[in-house]
Length: 89
Image 1 (tube, rainbow, N blue to C red):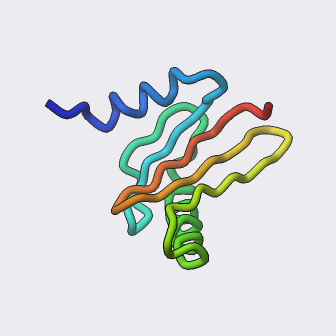
Image 2: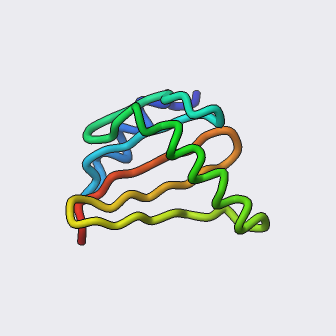
């Protein structure tokens, strides 16, 4: 039996340094949000992932945005985009 989406996000949240996670669909609808992730950013994150696919059509790109407050990793595969907030290393 497959794990539920929330269970997968709980697994991600348990990783060292992860403070938030967001999962959205291709239309930018937030499917699930945990921790510091903001559901209002789901549309922007989905758009970022779709634009990255245009830059690298033969790969599955990972976008990394870094700031003093947190690092944001974004990856889209199929119909789902996942954004992970981590403490800066």
